[in-house]
Length: 196
Image (tube, rainbow, N blue to C red; front, side, top):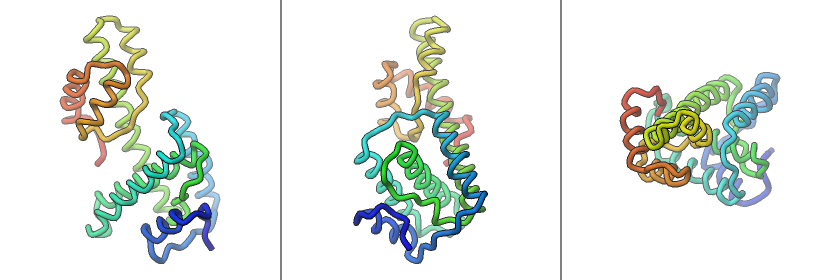
């Protein structure tokens, strides 16, 4: 029984994630995670909505990254982190209303809860890092506290802060000085509680 959207790429993704993927039964725990916890969190983040093609390519890219670390031991943190990224991209696209693979059915309730909590901690810490850095950069530019706070409140990003080109792209998108923004991110990245 396949719960995927009936297009060829979805079935290819199914076999890329697990060759003998089994769909777990729908329990009250799974209902709480998939219908309350994750959607409420996505509502709080209010990330920018993209078109369906962007979300599909994002899911495919995360699956490719997961396949790249599949050679690591089964209990490695890198592998778990990449799996959480797959869950994030899938649930983000589903939350936006697009037909993409819902990978949450491939995990037991315990694993899904672990992945969801890890995902929420990982992406929330990135979200707060970018907002805080944006507020500090804006304050350094204008020396106005209210405007700085508002600038930070508008930044809604969860990209990888280790990728310099992504950080510069975020700064340009929100009208911040790219050099200052990158310097703040690099400085705070040393002690900020980010998960891999």
